[in-house]
Image 1 (cartoon, rainbow, N blue to C red):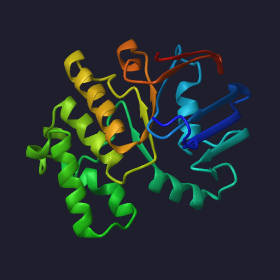
Image 2 (cartoon, helix red, strand yellow; image 1 turned 120 degrees about the vertical axis):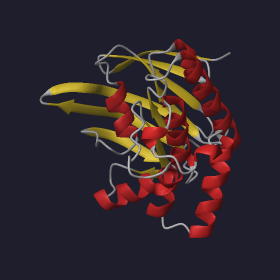
Image 3 (cartoon, rainbow, N blue to C red; image 1 turned 90 degrees about the vertical axis):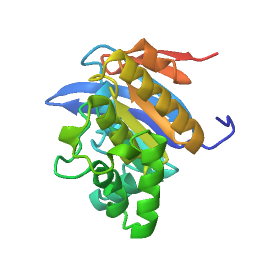
Length: 229
């Protein structure tokens, strides 16, 4: 992780309220290429809201967000959607695979949205399926996949368009300890290989071990930050 590299992501004094309750109370952070950041804190501390703001799903009430130097808070909804499609990958606790599509078709979705050439998309999907260890499940529907396999499909789908930023919300929360450890190891390896920055929301101290830094949130504020020596 090059210390001198320009930040991939910058958040300055981000605030967000729902129904008159302030959920984020002025959060600032930066993330560099290839850096992995864990967000920890009790339920209701603002972790998922912060992740949604960083990913352009929620718009902060005030503050500044920039991805690769592109201000996110000034983009039109269409411009923000285009930026998300190009530059951001997301992994969810409940996988969010489309049930009528095969594993390979689920992985290919971001490339279809970005109008990638069909031949190039096929190569990328095949390579990633082999890399995450599910090439033998190419034609399987999600209902036929195990939890660990579904999460590997979700990881491949999040990375297939080569995003600058990967956002993961409790990616091991629905997996047993062995599958959870495998997924974390895979995320660490792929981040190292691709230079993709990772923001990981987790309650798991095991998950923080793959990260360079851990930020602790409470009541919408950063209360502590730890770095790996």
